[in-house]
Image 1 (tube, chains in turn orange, purple, red):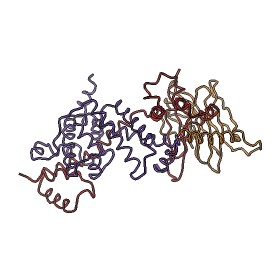
Image 2 (cartoon, chains in turn brown, orange, cyan; image 1 turned 90 degrees about the vertical axis):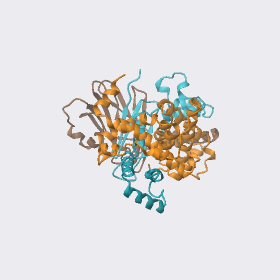
Image 3 (tube, one colour; image 1 turned 30 degrees about the vertical axis):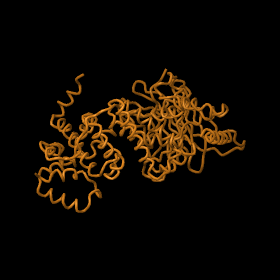
Image 4 (cartoon, one colour; image 1 turned 30 degrees about the horizontal axis):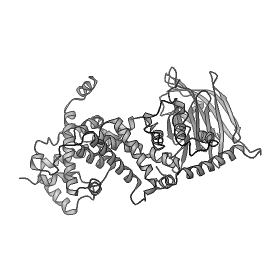
Length: 148
Length: 205
Length: 161
């Protein structure tokens, strides 16, 4: 079993390294929309109209009030990381790792905490990722969407 | 869950740790629920559940796919749970499986269906009863708890229960009868109390 | 001496578990026996309670560490609770990798540490055929990922010092 595992790990590592080392061709980036939003438990219960497209996805959460803090649109090339600053000095790293047709893999990393999340979504889906722990009933989230 | 068990199992058999992890995550809660029903103690059930997956992992190479993976997994879980109990309490007074006239007397039939009303699933009392199931089950003997859990949580048929427990189908049915009867007796005590009184009791240390 | 003892155990049967002659005999008995009819009614309302109650307990419990602990036991590290206390960030995949140090070449470890564990889950949602591959790095304090048809929602655990 250990030998097979090593072979598989070897293949995966090779693949990962190949992806990261990538050809130095100016690959067309994927247009990505990144927003920083703030959720609060305290009312008034209101969702910024610019966040209407997130309403359904956010509905299971306990936060009743959602504000838009920051919005960016940019092209992300594979393997490149965009650092989005957060109020308070931290930042969130968003990396587009892979794209196959309508399916994209992003990595969201929080520099202040040891958190890296690798998430694969289809066109039309959004990643919503908490980026600060809840304090005083408020928390910050980042949303990432390819082809916004 | 669309990715079927068999493809994860064959990947796991070739040593793919991620496929095995996916299998664990898929079944962990149900395995825990079965273990909990049999051993009663949550931490012990946690331990038994983990050990079941360890055993499965050790024997992956020998799994031939003749039965469903889940059946195999639950069979291991059941045996582990029963063995764990036996270690704690080696001898138990034997229950009688046969159903006799005396077993039917004083049954209090109808109390539960009256209390729960016509649409039990929408009823708050039903949710409260479900929450009390662990306590009710704790009153039962190991044999009765086991057969009830296998019947309801794993969903085994009479035939499958007979095979799993090594008893005749007729014994399966009578043992289930006794198990249900005892469980319902325990539940009736809860159903008989007004909800407020029951929750006051829970707050007492 | 009634025939109830013969029929009472038949009451919990599911479709296909009784022969047609058993079914007919049971129906004939129930037509005349109120006690057994009430018993059947009680059985009907409590059907599934054991399952619901136990699954409820399972759902109430935090299973986030479960699979990592299983992998640690498989690696021969013993039950997770016997491991020496490790910093929270080192739990999970790293602990499991530590158990597999013999199998993992040092050069590969950093790559694998970033590669994380893969959970193949098909999202529920309005459109069938949507697959969300959720890969979570275990070095984080991610406590919950909600699967929605619009995409995943990742929540953080409590800050650890």
